[in-house]
Amino acid sequence: MDTNAQILEKTVETLDPTWVLAIIPALNEARHIEACIRSLMSGDDWLRRVTLVVVDGGSTDTTVEIVTSLMPEFPNLRLVHNSKKLQSAAINLAVAQCADDSARFLIRCDAHSIFPAGFIQSVASALQRTQAASVVIPMDARGESCFEKANAWIVDTPLGSGGSAHRGGTRSGYVDHGHHAGFDLSVFRSVGGYDETFSHNEDAEYDERVVQAGGRIFLDATIRKIYIPRGSVAALARQYYNYGKGRARTVFKHRQTPKVRQMLPILALLGSLIGLLAAPFYLPAILLPAGYLTILTAASVYVAMVKKSACGLLAGVALGTMHMSWAAGFVIQSLAGPR
Image (cartoon, rainbow, N blue to C red; front, side):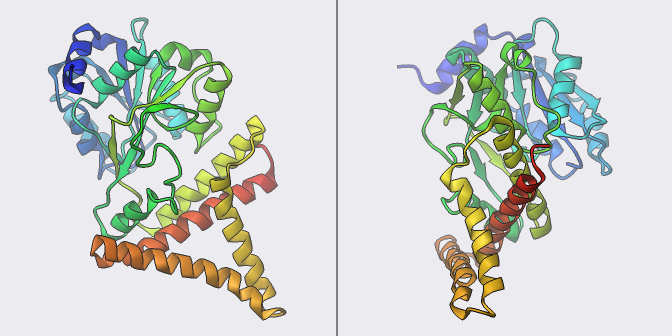
């Protein structure tokens, strides 16, 4: 029986690199962009013939200079400027400007990540093999600073985002949503690409349209990437607040019913607020926020013990930030309505 490596090698022999367009949306990614590009170009020489496009949303750090400096080493690397800044617009722009008639597969590569060798080959191979409309993959969070480590350790658990198949999952199969890695370009174009009015959750909104159009989404758990989570409470709060707003917009646009795991942070936020407001008049109400804080504290102690690191004590802070920020974004956007 052929191994995965042998299957990939055979597929690459029949997979023309001109069929593949790889895109990295970026905004102020000076810390990560070079490692990201080098990880994507690590592997078979076949990769050097794939068009790799960094779409910069107006970075004010040295992202553009770093990408430009790498172009002599990687002649297949291109830089496109995205005046709309958003990732959704970045992908659409690169497809419009860089996908010629021979392009069949689109590979999305987020700059805040480190990819395994041959990632682009693997995703394109999975698209060709499964004939799926999209291929999605699991993310394995890994931190560098103390807060990033705590964030990474808790995010992939059931208390964090671990209820999602693409958060640390190990089973391959067809799903209704996942972390975007590859697209059949004909499907991408036929459904209109990403909705550029979405600053966040554009992936879930796109997946909903693909499924409605009869497309299938394949989660390939053998293809994984390392995701570097946000390194501060403020950055994490902004990220999850926008995630919550984006999810609410998707729910409104497609008239969805939120999943139970998505409702839990909202219940935690509302319960804690009600408890705090009611406590001066009915003291037992304080048990609501106190109970939630107890869960966060227990999570911190557990992670610190399992990982044998004091950094784990920040896991509860990261978890509470994710929950409260996501819930606040969802509630505020829901009150504002579908816009």
